[in-house]
Structures are given as C-alpha cells and as structure tokens.
Length: 396
Image (cartoon, rainbow, N blue to C red; front, side, top):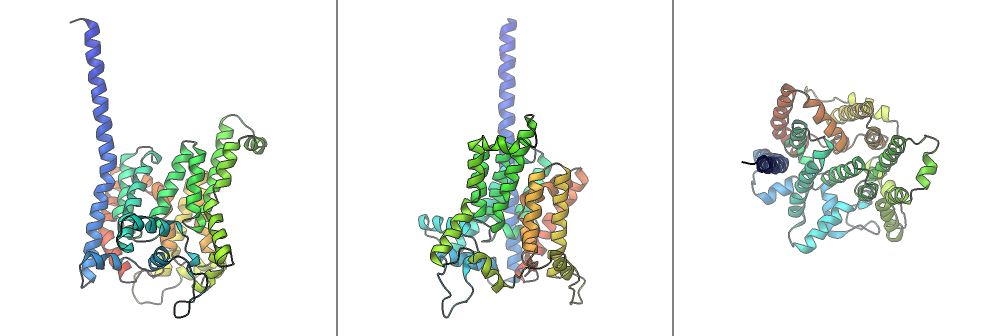
C-alpha cells in the first residue's frame, strides 16, 4: 500500500477519534448537571414528602415558595403598586427587582400555566444553564465542574436554585458576564451586567469587574497605568460596554420615578423590612453571639454571620489568585447588604458564582476531598431542605 494512502487513512482515523472524543465530552458536560438536577429534584421531593401531608406536585411548588418568593409571584402577576393599597400590606413591592418576575410573566403569556409551575421549571433550568456556562470558566476541570454542578443542583442550598428567587438567574448572568470577560467580549459583558442590575441591586457592581479586566488587557499589551484613562477614552466600544452596564438599574429607577414618584423607592422601602444602615462588624458580632436556644445547632443569625465571613474569606482567596475583578465584585456584594443586617445573607453568598466555583476547585484538588465533598453535598441536601421548609433557616 502506498505510504500516502497509509498516511491518509491514519489522518482519517485520528480525525474520527478526535470527533468521537469531542462528542463524548459534550455529552459528559451536558449530562453531569442533568444527573444532579434529577437527583436534586428527587432528594428535595423526598424532603418535602417527609414534612407534608399532601405529596402532590402542586403542593410541592407551593411549599418551596417561601419568604421573598411570594413577592416575586405578586410582581409577576400584578406588577408593582403605585401606592400602598388599603386592605393589603402597606409595604410596597419596590424593593424586589423586576427582571426575573418579568421573565416568568413573559413565559406565562406564551404558555398559560400557573406562575409557580413556570418558576419551578425556570429556576432549575437557569441553574442548569449556569453549570454549562461554568465549564469553560473552570478551565475544563471535570472534577471541579462535577462538584460545582452538584452544589447548585443537589447541594445543601440547592433549594435556593429550585424556588422562585433571583438566585438562579443571578448566577446564570454572573457566569455569562465572567465568561464574556474571560474572552474579552466587553459588549456581551456590558449586556450581562445590565441584566444583572435589573435582577438584584448589587448586580450593577459587576461593572467594576469589567473595568478591572479592561485594565488588565491594557497592561498585558504594554500599556502604562497612567495611560489607561486615555486608552479607554480612545476605545468607544469599551466605553459603550461600561455605559450600558447599569442600564437595567437606571430603567427601574426611571420606572419608579414615573409610577411612584420616587426613583429610589427600592432603597427607601428597606426600612419597612427592618433594614437600617449600621456597622457591618456589629451585625456580624450580633449574629455570631445570638444563641438563645438550648440546642447545639447554630441559630439562623449565626448561619448568616458565618456564611458572610466565609464569603469574604473566599473573596480574599480570589484576589490571591489574581482574580481581582471577581474578588472585588463578591466582596462588595457581601458587604453592601451587610451594612443593613444579616437577613438573606446565606443565599446572597451562595448566589455568588465566583465563590462557589472557587470552592469547587479547592475541594476537588484531590480525589479524597472531592469524594468527601460530593457525599457531603448529597447527604446534607435532604436535611437542609427539611430545615428550610420547616422555617429553621428563616433568616438565611
């Protein structure tokens, strides 16, 4: 057989193997989060069935609609009030940002299903998409990727990503933003930041990560620190990316100005929820020292305080790893709500994708720690879900 023919056959064989390998990798990347999505659903349903007399799926969806979920349901179905309504709560819905309720309302306009049913499907779908986006962000580290997927879909706090809360969409958009920054696609990053700023107030803070990434690109090309502002002003594409980043927040402020007469109603209404500005360190100390029960289990304020400290510690580790944009974004996103109180602090920290990804990378550094973390996530999912459904984690 001629040598040219042999070389051609070998090339075709290698190409077939490469194609097969790529196909297997795609199936694995898509299948791992799907596996944990299904296992998480089974575990959470088992937890629900153990505390509920009604095991129906409708009752399951209602049971997971706790705390802020009821506000998002009202926004999705009724919109925002123009003023307090007699006979209803005198606390307006303005403190809850509109993007996710709008998304659910948009889906409901096409598929006429109940709001909670749509959200019960949409939230895990967002979490699943977050996992897929995380794959290139985690440098294609399969162990870390599997652990991250397990944490989101079947972990101890996976109920946050299965309920009608902003965390599923926030994690997805955050992941999209940092993937865009990794690829220096600043327009996509600006759009992601704009959507983030319409999802939660702290979302607008991601613009700092965008600017830091721009600065790093400038320095990598040999630019000076002093010359960065001039370089930036000479790049209209970068300026557009920065200027559109707060568009979601500005649009909501404009809406509140026109309808309520107070563009910052989302800030002013926080007092009605007991959020008053104070010293973050004092809030942390009060949370850590709050233990009126005789049980050895940590109280909800202690959970919140410990989670905030852990989140800030992981932010420092991001900075040590030279992920300065993600570190700054996460640190501010924790500290800003901490200036009022510890309410919802656990889900705020859990909903910061860079922190969860870093934790997954650290825990997957060796096979024993990976296996231990994976078993821990799956084992605690049931008990933490029962605790959350029972109100133990009310402030978390």
